Length: 58
Image 1: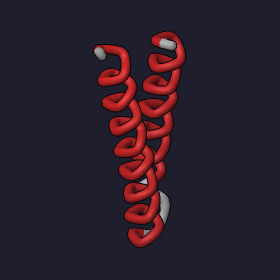
Image 2: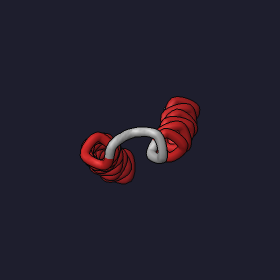
Image 3: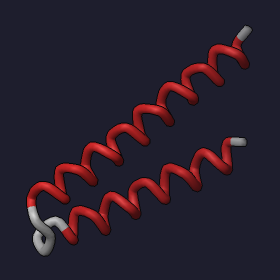
Image 4: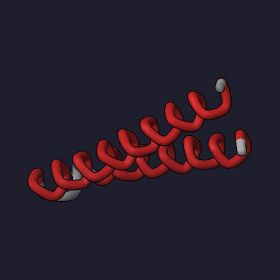
């Protein structure tokens, strides 16, 4: 499970790097939309990780 977590984190960082590199080339509304989507995805990931950690510690 921890290996999967690391793969997801690396994928998130890679995606963030690609999006940040593309921000210069795409319009601002699209950039903000993509930023919001990635932020929501990371928020869901963090909540799931926290819930999993609580479950494991009990």
